[in-house]
Figure 1 (cartoon, chains in turn cyan, orange):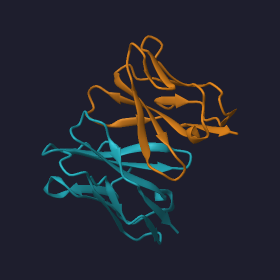
Figure 2: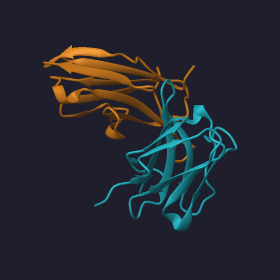
Figure 3: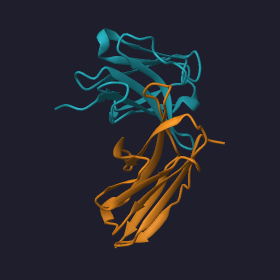
Length: 113
Length: 111
């Protein structure tokens, strides 16, 4: 079946602009995660959605970052007023439940100029 | 200090060599442990979970020492296709599905 998909695969934006990144999880997976991977920082957790529970936003680096998950499926990560330090690969993952194996999407490479 | 620490490498080994990666974690609340593999410019993929009794999957053996908060991965008879970055990953018992990643250890297997 289809894996986790993300769009766009690459995004170049100017400093100060807003960007939206999209994630389509594997069908039937109730848990969805956002991570980012930047040079020198490794992979870091951003936010976690599990079913209808309140999301775990503990990894969001600032209030410029927000995410939503509509209808328990597709998720959008929004970064407002982008900064150069936001440049990274943003990875989405999903799992059947919060305890299951996480399957990662191919990521969105964000470059802020 | 990072919560999950790994030697970044790179480890350059010839085909057929045995190579071992080590990882330490600092949070005693960590309850689940994994090794992920990440190829260059690709997403991470689960290689294997790590169990307290140690576990093996073909040429790969993972060990966990909870007392020392130490995890290892041993690759025997390494292949060219094993070249990748190996990520040590932990999950805390009280924090849902959130994964905490080490920086990764780069492995390059040469002919």
